[in-house]
Image (cartoon, rainbow, N blue to C red):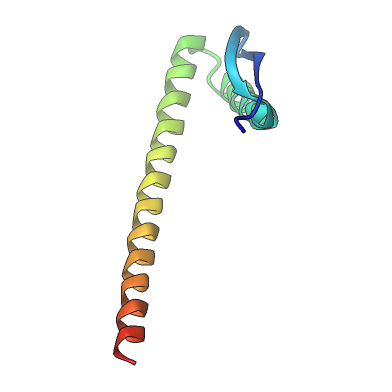
Length: 96
């Protein structure tokens, strides 16, 4: 059974965003993401006082995207290693 979908309103750096079709069991994750982004924004706003909100959000977007892509690469490497180990185990069991 597909989880119930709900509408949520979040606030990122003072911008209200309406989210539609959020799985009910993902609401806490959405709130954690909202809190994380706003925390980073507040920290960077305090550090980069002369920069515009748009500039700070652009820097944050790059940093978050860069970290996400690094995690994707790490996941790909872990999956490749798991496949290698699975194959090795299969060969060992087949030759026993």
